[in-house]
Image (cartoon, rainbow, N blue to C red; front, side, top):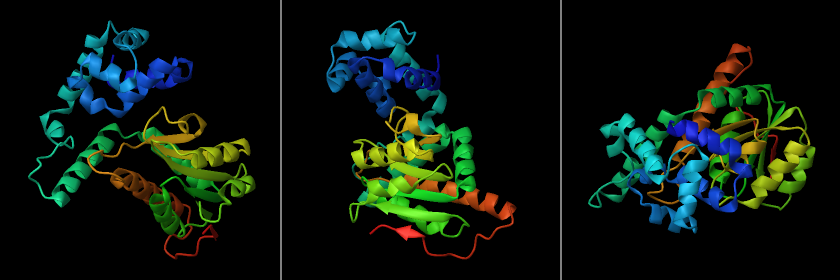
Length: 276
């Protein structure tokens, strides 16, 4: 079994797993790079479960035990090659702070490139290109990314709505969403409630959801018509390098689609609504 196949299986069965097995699934998803060196007691302690639960998890997904689970991550590391391994975000302490950030960001982008979901990306571009109105949720710490998208998407022929927490009306605003609209939500652990509540309301009203998440196990993944997994480096806080890269790619792809349709993509116009 490959690592990607394992995580596809986990995502499909996640809701049916016990609380303990869900905790282990989340840990594996968020700590892939460390698993090849992890000990079973370390994993169990991090998940607040007994080591036997880790073995039970491995067997639940067709592996003989923890050793086989660990071997699968080691094999993935071998396939990536030593060059990628050297760019895993672990940098010498002697490097200048800026150099450490650059190295960690480069490693994050390499991981994004290796795991990029082209089908999910094209699906997201299609949803955005067909939307009458695009809501960009700048909630729970995602305002910098949502603001970039709002600025870039002003150059398209569709209405753009930047939704922020300022004014406290973001939840009510979702009541205007319809089946002709697309919601873009950015979310990563620890997951904030405002983004999820707004997505649930928009989803209930028939709007399509494009979700940028840090895990297939994110609460938004099951609600999204298109979800893109983006894992940021943990070498420094508040990293958004890879998330912005995906957004830039979405804008570039959308520009190509828009120009192919014969509509303009060069004259910026104000966002139709900015909640501030």
